[in-house]
Image (tube, rainbow, N blue to C red; front, side, top):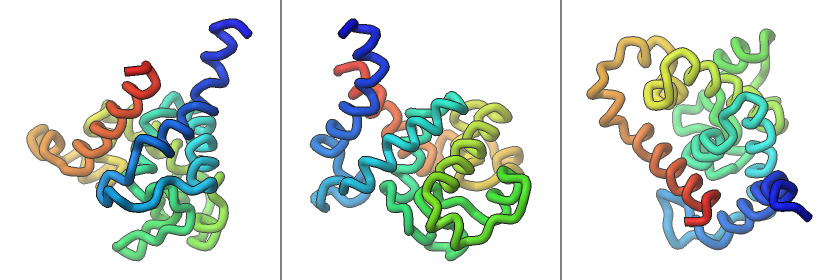
Length: 172
């Protein structure tokens, strides 16, 4: 197999294994490692995210949002699934109404909508403010000061995870 061939399949195979061995939950170190369902979700997120050119960033966002737990209900009671997608966001990204049950039961749909929204936010605001947008919404992102975005704990956590993921992918 050529080096180019390895580069094409390696992220889908090696990354989940590396994450399982090296990457405990960012907020709860010491918990059990990733489950096979989480590993599968990571692969699916990278595949879907690649279509929107946000593959690794989507993995970092989903990890921060839910640790790839597809049945996660947000603390606010209004965010659903591994991407913690809200119903309003789902409707905007899908172009039709999507119910909470679909967002929780259909991981592919949840990841697809999360990837679309993340891509939308990044195209509109750039990476840092785009992450702020993903977590806080378009209106708040448009009104937030640079300082608020730079100090936002969510943005910093996702960027840290993203950097860690990129260094794993580059072999550092």
